[in-house]
Amino acid sequence: MKVTIFGTGYVGLVTGACLAEMGNHVVCVDIDAGKVERLKKGEIPIFEPGLEPIVKRNYASGQLDFTTHPAPSIEHGQIVFIAVGTPPDEDGSADLKYVLSVARTIGQHLDKYTVVVNKSTVPVGTADRVRAAIAEELEKRGASVEFDVVSNPEFLKEGDAVEDCLRPDRIIIGSSSERAVNVLRKLYAPFNRNHDRTVVMDERSAELTKYAANAMLATKISFMNEIANIAERVGADVELVRQGIGSDPRIGYHFIYPGAGYGGSCFPKDVQALERTARGVGYDARLLGAVEAVNHDQKTKLFELISRHLDGQLKGKTIALWGLAFKPNTDDMREASSRNLMEALWTAGAKVRAFDPEAREETHRIYGDREDLVLCDNAYQALEGADVLAIITEWKAFRSPDFARIRGMLGSPAIFDGRNLYDPVAVEEAGLAYYGIGRGRSL
Ligand code: UGA
Image (tube, rainbow, N blue to C red; front, side):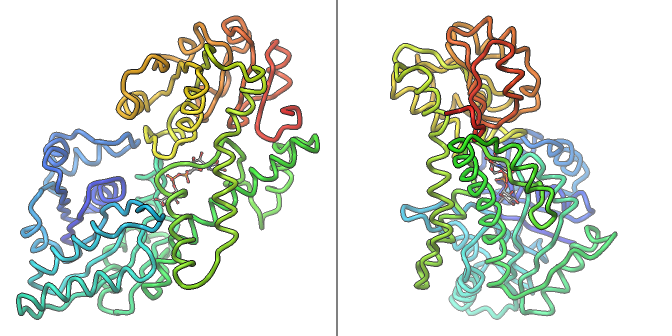
């Protein structure tokens, strides 16, 4: 099928590449000419395992193309995806200016029946606003062209995006138009070979499904962080509690890992936006507010533990940091807990020596050259001249380090394990103080 995608960010690029891989003719449109040129050369702007080969292969074979020109792209697509960003505006609601601007562009050029699909995470009611914007532009030019607007949210995880896109758990099609649903069923048929993963519903329910999924996952994390905070005060180990509750299939083992708080471009933004949506319709979403507040505090947790260990004397101290990205297998630093920690340490007069397998460049782009930040080439280099070690991203490479070597390199041997990667007993036997999240001994 002929597909057009507006926006070559995470969602747009991955969706475009995966749809091309399934044999569709895909044109990706972006207003950033430099980005389009780089994509044509096979340079992928993000670190995402498995993405580069499918972009290169499908661009070479002509299944996938990149352009800055909207008019021919709209003419090309039977299906036009909107996958542009929805950054939070000052009050936490999702800013729809890019989505609506694409909608207007579509209205200005539409020339045949087209299914317009909202792939970006957008507030409930956006499909109606996109429909109205397109209709208004059609009316301005006196054109009468049929179209449908569908909500088809994306559920990909950074780091697993290609896999999630090629093998989705579910495909939500939010549309009350049978014609549009049939077009999308055809597009997604190759993804449904073993069993049908499609769930068809109305637009508003589809839009809310996306927020509800992310809010539920964020709630699980804040819930566990709350239990961790209780555990350390009552002398329990949250890691044992986690295994104890996860064995109940109604709870499950997934997404109940306590830690230094959730980050990324989705959970913080989406929880806030949903809370805001609720407020807009006269409902005070207290649970969502609490999920956010717990996460906010959790992001300062490691700083407090480090500060206490060093008796509040952080000035002139050097903290080694393993991990910078908001989670492993990405170079994304958006809302990363490492940023809260580093910024608090700098304010207190400490220096940071950090190592991350992928996020070095991104960290440098954000913070530039500064005396109190050294970005290192490997994990042990970060320990040179450092007083203590904090781990904030659970990259596999940090899972079984040489504790004796770490102890030998640190001025005040202690590990602050922001993701509960290590066995406290093994760390202490190696002569280091151990601080985890919710593991009794931290207090
Ligand atoms: C999240 C959702 O998982 C995807 O399903 C969704 O499609 C995506 O947002 C989106 O809306 O686009 P992502 O932000 O890539 O995906 O990252 P996650 O793997 O969900 O991790 C989010 C944060 O939660 C990370 O900072 C991670 O460290 C933290 N986390 C995760 C925990 O602290 N504990 C856990 O048990 C799991």
